[in-house]
Length: 347
Ligand code: NAD
Image (cartoon, rainbow, N blue to C red; front, top):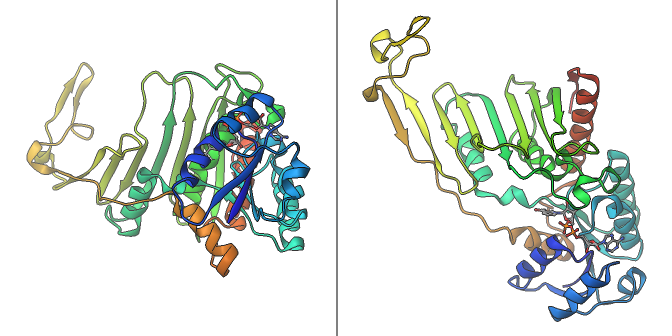
């Protein structure tokens, strides 16, 4: 299958390197509005077209990757589908749920497959948490905390500008929220409460915290920070029969369980204000450390699935109803942060 790329920047380079290792898929050419980016593509031995229209008029190109900044995803994806191409769009799919609705309608109208590159569904940290939940390893899970922390502020490119769809909710939030909504697929989200941060940038959010409540009572905290000089763990998952801690993306971490609820199972702590037993650490012999379960993942399955959908009518992995839910959730995060109120929903 021949694919064209529109927008040949950092992420398109990642796609090119991956696609080089995928059987049955090849890059036929690229278009970018920036001359330096076009030259980079030529250096990599790629065909560069003179315009978006020229690329979209190539009969042998079946699939288009949209890898531009977020503000032009919608117009480019729509033009590509109207030119008869299937489309993979980078995340976040669009600037709003309204734009996504337009893209979805054009996909239905033209019969072209349209999906979104939610590649962090293949991250091992996420798949480890998914396995822990699927296998009920921690008993009933009552709280999940998912965080990514950086310390260099928001990048200085278009990500810092609202008109291009910058900001960390759209940039990283979209991945973390997609992961949570997948973990809870089938259970409605009922409440959203959020804060944004503007530490290094006033135009867009350079981080956020959101607290989500699901209909089964599960509480979820999702946080993206870019001025965090000491990181909290990537995941912290609490069940009534254990706690999982995943410190990083690798993931390094452990499952911790405990035995015994008596006062004799702890080592009382004497603080200046008095003795505490409730918040005291356990005796070593009442606490058990287990390894995290192992998972395997190959992010190339994203493109293998795209080809399978187009050629054989397979079920897409990244489905538009899922993408729409995350888009609406991001809109609620902005709304909650703006009003300072929790938003009740049924998502
Ligand atoms: P980038 O700035 O490195 O590259 C964007 C390129 O698009 C630039 O070369 C620019 O000249 C070009 N461009 C801008 N407008 C265009 C237009 N109208 N037509 C053709 N080309 C145009 O940005 P990036 O980091 O590569 O991000 C691109 C997209 O990929 C964004 O949507 C971003 O959110 C997404 N992304 C996804 C991941 C992921 O893990 N899935 C990671 C990074 C970026």
